[in-house]
Image (cartoon, rainbow, N blue to C red):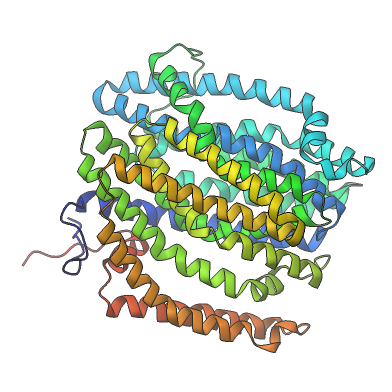
Length: 541
């Protein structure tokens, strides 16, 4: 039997459900490892696109066009779909027959397929109007406006395939199967890389091949999950039953969830709209957010994905004390990993972008523009990660209204700050506005959830943050010294620069985890469990 790590005295609340935290830790470890593979490929993909297209007009057109289906992907697919599907499916799977659970999954699949197919066709037809509304900075450039419209039409079917992939992920996650869904984006990135390198030279407008690769990648992301679904007993079948009681409940949960979880994408879309007034602005924001999503996807989203089935189970059984402890555990682990990542990205932003992106068409000026956007986004990295944990707690309680209302407030904050900061700071002000809006969003959710659950074990969370703050001191010192080296302003010397950057990252990790070890942080013990996924069995004495 897997052994529980022995936490330091006083560091873990006695209410914390150890079985659940171990299960969440293992699941987050599986998701994080699989997501790491996907993110590395995604990073390589972004390096290739930066090298091929830089931050020119074609790149701006592509990233503006990609933002439109990507916003709808967030609305119909990833977070909202899982958050609406998992609580209802978990209840059916736990309290009803297996056949009833699969009938619900089949009805949800067919209903989603019908709905999103209609939205996709409508989006293709309405693309000229959508681009006109979402890229006001391109109104004076008819050629770029036409290219952006064509790219939008090509990429809209991506929404259909990625929505189906998200539903497949929801089914598998509800059954505690995490590895295959987390690995699915690997196939997406492989397809985009192949189309960018091998297919794009065949096109008069090479960026069109990348757009086609996005669609093919979305299809691959869905198809590669089908064998795992079949193994679990789910067979795709046409069962259009939108009035199915479970589907109707999902719909009731989904509608406000669309706004509650998609607030980040909505705010990024607003930023992209306003960034179209600045040359290179949409591209700088895209690459900066891709770097933010590296730690966010590997751990923040992984933890939120792993924690939802446990929260849903605890909410369904009325175990609110355990639910509160699970939320506290999720927040502590998110801060444990995300805060050093945030500090590293802020202090090493220029060396990272210079080393990995400043090649080919991507110039030193593009490095400066992307680095400033990364600084703005990084301010809110901890909030981007933790608000998902808080939102999952509300959704497990089948309260989708509160996150939706708070999301509306967050969007309003983002719009106000963007209009205020874009004039003096340009695209950097837009990134900073998104980061500050995420902080406001998270704090409001935390206060409301704390009142709902009679506290979130604040002393335990405060003690964890204090340990993390102390452990960040060697990280800050090493990163400041590394970023000040004149090496980063010189041309070439790629191997030496890579060596110095790895030294900074490795030294920071040793210092950070070393301080936590000395402070006997129980977060470090759970981190070991995530990395190892399973502790070895102990032989009976």
